[in-house]
Length: 252
Image (cartoon, rainbow, N blue to C red):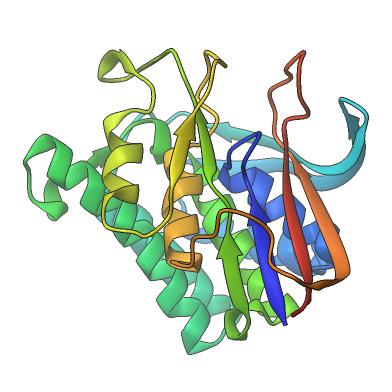
């Protein structure tokens, strides 16, 4: 079996990847229940509503995450988030492969911030990534990957669209892709590409999950028989394209 991740047009975020896996056939109830269980390890944050729904995204039927949270936290230590994710995976009872994957995802995010700011990993503070969104993405995707049996399959990734223009966040304004994105992709084989969209199309969480999921970069689809396709919608809307991540599963 082979799986092709296609972020050539809309890039990738954690929720887009999670939704595409649900559309591919991952058990959404298992994912929702696991995420709700994980909420216990993330103090001062609560999930008021979580679900997945079919929508039309610029003419493409896809799955979108419905997430309503209640939290009053603006920064968290990276080590705190890692502990919450690790405890969540253990509590849910996922495999050792799943635990290694989820730990690696958050480690990559922490390492990128450590390198950029020249501080120890233990000192890393997350701002945008401090939200329970990060836990939802990593834990949810880990559950979905295990449910679909994808940890044992060949995964390929097409060039990743990162967008263009500038991005403004807790550290000010900088050109897109921001330093965290560049740092995450720096030591991987995956390729990125910019375009004329003045938006961030690939998020740090999406990037860190992707580089731990595969290191097999391809420029085009392999010869394959297609078995299933998953479409995961992002939250943003664009006039000229569907903000949708595509995942194709089949056999070579």
